[in-house]
Image 1 (tube, rainbow, N blue to C red):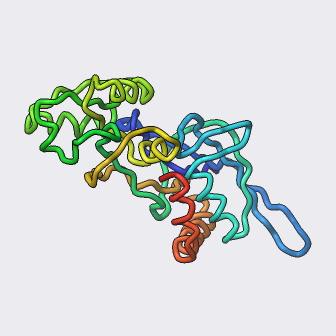
Image 2: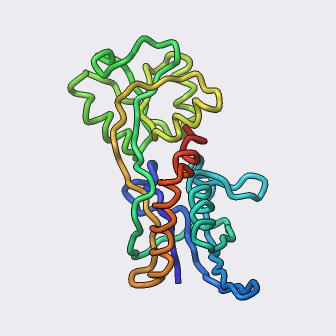
Length: 229
């Protein structure tokens, strides 16, 4: 049995990429009440979605799964790993997107102001696809990067007018102190879902969907997402 929490990887979007995998379910007995425990394999270095810091699992996906497990009375053991396969999906728990980002003091507030400018994108990402899509319309030069660090640096040093990147990554970076800004131009990409081996673990899917609805209605979901944006 393998259960997987998926992130559509913005770098490897053309390959199925999975970030949280639940591989073993155990039943623990605490008094008269049964508590099921799931071992979850986390795709590391996937911040702000999932990551290990000081041997502790962190990230949006981890926070959401922790909150849902409390609502539905199961526990989680996080392990550093990843895998992929053929799955059924739960309800979507997050809508990803890409957004254009510039220096905080830039006067760019629309695509029209990018006319004849150079912009940055991460290679093999949705940002690259969209940047190349609008390049002819605005006569853009699109520069590819392999890391956000290099792309951020070039933007700060005025080597590019700005860049397209994962919305949550950008807003998380801004919250941590990066001097960037965005405008209301998010382009939607992946809807993230929990994945399970086809035909297996119907009980877990039901519990996840139920818990997700509860944390969305009681305000916990919004609180978790706002930690990152």
